[in-house]
Length: 342
Image (cartoon, rainbow, N blue to C red):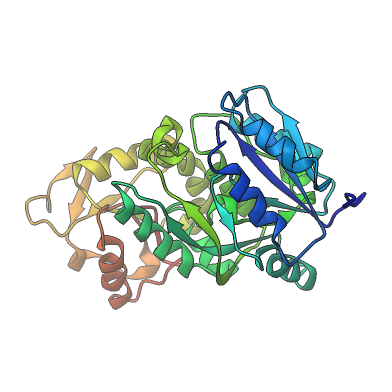
């Protein structure tokens, strides 16, 4: 089978020491109903024979291209793949995940029919054993509910609103807004924040079209760039910029949450120029106290929505939903009067 000169989709798949899973991942791309693709498998310094596995598959399918990145890290490997891609659309894939057969066909259809959409992701199903599987399930349940461009944009300060290996985007976005960056932050989350801030519209297909393998050694668990503090430091300047026009006219800025964890999470926002006018908490032991000079109030003391904007930073399973119900009962509107940041 000969490779197309300019395939519609370039699938970028960096890998390192994935000999046990890479064949199955590549076969899931070969099994796509959409056939006009190339797979750029970027070997980031493997020592386990994974490169040989891909090389043998490339020998029988010219759409597969093995690239070398010599162990420079995931960001360099991703950018090498993007720079080498010939498609008008770029899709991501990981070497331990599985793409369901209709994935590329469904994503290509959205990008072809909707010129206003820059990136389309899919719903994702997790698989594989892990001691923290419950956390992954909660994340996927939350992420899979975010489908419209508006819902994705509104949720971006909570967590990465799309699962990285599920996305397909227009190649021109890279030249227009830049690719992945190195730093003490999750490279995908920083990219999503940057593109969304520039006005790129993301959407998500409701169908599960990617199976995302969870394992203890995956980067999101093992790499310090994915620790919670790194996420908060990454999002803080983007949230600060998003909030400034919404605080015009002397509107008060309130942070919901006054516990130790929340106070740690607020620090990067303060560094980015968000000085809180007050805090909100339901704990009577905290109400009436002060944090850096700003008073802690109870929810019943909240001013009218137009007089204040609330950033919720309280953590814990179900806390965000409870806070949203409380704020909605007071007439606060998401994106207009409050935003979730945890």
